Image: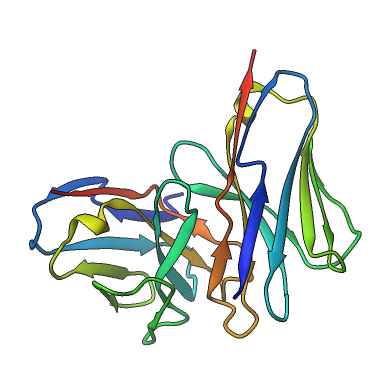
Length: 112
Length: 113
């Protein structure tokens, strides 16, 4: 059965720390992996990864994919309280690209 | 820019009542989705519409129906609400398919007593 697993499920860090969030997947005929950030309301898109080893960056956030080992990591450097959110990993099924499997999310709390 | 708009934002129903959640997007996207989000379970797909005129079941379709009214609007109907349907419901859209980034509405918090 296709699945997406994220770890840790929750994390508390101090401002300025660097964090690494993990997403592993078992999805038949993988096509892409997407990361979303969810604060109080709607998830918002962060990154889409399709190729192994190519890092995507946006400010203090970066992400990379390993298609051989079936995982992705999301790094946040110099964390700020505004980074507090749930980070969701999602993988579309290749048999039906619209059927996206979301992981349970990692809840990140950044304390001053 | 409005993006994806959901109504209502909150609703309390009694068991057995029916209601329709509304969703509209103004980005000219082809694909639209309905998800539910429960604590510890992430987002689970209820129904989706790959393009205007088509709808299909997701992971948890039982107890729900959908209508893709036109390219902009995708509604979710609970015919006879049950307490197990208490959840936060999100509508989303993407240009074409879930492999592309989805844009989400702010959600509807639904409680069924």
